[in-house]
Image 1 (tube, rainbow, N blue to C red):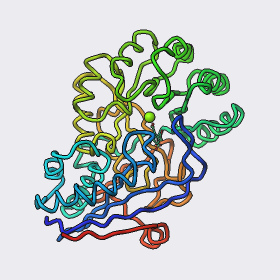
Image 2: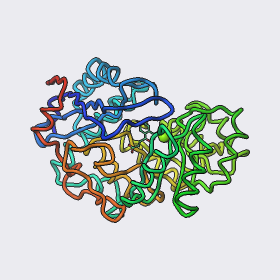
Image 3: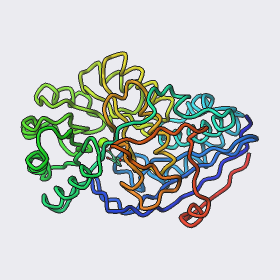
Image 4: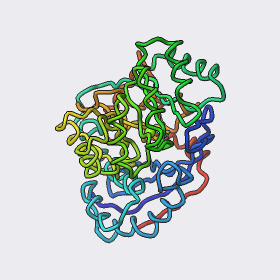
Length: 368
Ligand code: OSB
Ligand code: MG
């Protein structure tokens, strides 16, 4: 396969409702898409950066810049012929894992479409459907939270994750437990909003039988998470802190994480995501697939990844209508609390050209 260029595209997708976390509120998803052009099939990549560097240091304008100025020219020079070669061609460039992941995704999609192999088959999926969890944003009131959670439970979601922050933690969790009972699979995500001095406060969550508490402390605070894990009984699950297989190995060895949230964008791509899965599995650490409010493209790849054998917990893998009234691709529809794993070549879904054109705010073609 010969790579001949990339098309960069920013699309604005309205969310069905604002999504509030400890780092801010999203009302629209500003998605950077990449289309890999080759002498055979074309492939799609979705960059998971947010508009502002508030979840991690990357952000959409920064990703566009590093892609145009450094990463895409490096692929052109290296005459990259497939996804495995993308990683080595980009290796000299530090960081920018979300931008790198999007490039690798586009090239892998083109490669798999051209040989007729599905994403699931390529990664080693062992299930043909995956259970759906849902991430619930911070609400204006407890009553509103109970209504929103009730809607998701009614729809069939098999696991609920509540976003928390100081001032919105113990009482919302207590209210959800009281309303929906002790059997509801429930976990929380702090997006690094606490510090180690909050350990006693966070230990109050232990009474609610949560599956885990996700990323309570800062991204680079592995030791703090290891210390916290000795004070709080609820298992700690790292998200932001796990940026590579190497950081995953360190976190496991230190006892900083009992469970890992794997987000392919955060770790530099689906191939590194699979390495973290393999490492965690060898260490008996359960993993689940995180989400970044993806369109159907990223969602398709995440659903396939979540079908690997070590993904033993339901992920933030929800139906298209959790975030979007109209998805860019064929929609992912939840049936009996599950999504079907795509089995067609590559990602197995394709953007609707008319909708894509309507939502595109900017585009640029870079030919080699
Ligand atoms: O921390 O898991 C997170 C969305 C954007 C950025 C960070 C996170 C999230 C979510 C949503 O929780 C997950 C989803 O896409 O369903
Ligand atoms: Mg998280």
